[in-house]
Image 1 (tube, rainbow, N blue to C red):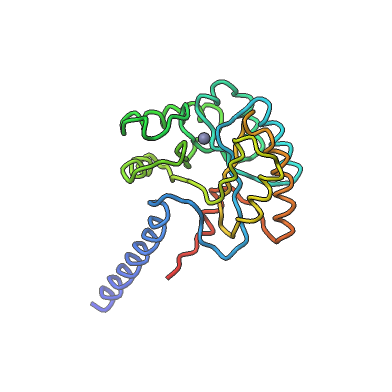
Image 2 (image 1 turned 45 degrees about the vertical axis):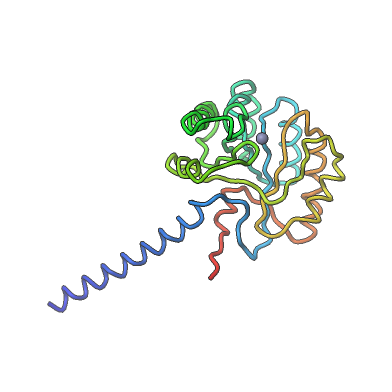
Amino acid sequence: MHRKTRFWSVFAVVGIMGMVLAGGSISHTMQVIKKVPTTHKVVALTFDDGPHPKITPTLLAVLKEKDVKATFFVLGENAEKFPAALKSIADAGEEVANHGYSHKFSRQLSDNDFIKDVSRAEEAIARIAPRPTLYRPPGGGYTDRRVMDLKQRGYTTVLWTVDTRDWDGRSSNDIVNNVLSNVKPGDIVLLHEGDFAAATPAAVAIIIDKLREKGYSFVTVGQLLQYYELRE
Ligand SMILES: [Zn+2]
């Protein structure tokens, strides 16, 4: 009798702990991640719209020289066009994530076509790199329904905190200043790969040096999620 009671109390405690743990992980994977609440000085650099035959090697050289790992939200279409560039991202140990197949904005697609676009990109990426688990919608548009559908497919939806607007032809100095004056612990920085963002690799080299001087370290988005501190 005594033993039986103890058995059930242990069972109940384990059950409650399980629910608490599951609740903790659900609370941040169910929502859209724009930043991670943390007191640690960590930042994630993210590069959208690649891979790109010219910009990817330049960017990877910078990241290698600085010993930084970042997250690349690539397009399925570009993964198919430039498989060698995508392979070099994966081989360098950078994180490869899904940015859809052909950069269609969320509102241009029905719910059904949206998830098809995500899957098509996933298949193109997974032929070359590890199957992605992070998704960023082109333009940042989303609905709760789509975030749920993505979750069911194993994806966490990721947006950003600091928008560098590096795609509009601004100088690397402007990109650097934008990041330095806005970045806070747990932030996600939005940058791009492409001819339209030619100043980005040079800016990234300076951003890394300057933020390190301020005590920051760099992690991938996947690693950043591990810093999520639940606050009461
Ligand atoms: Zn994009």
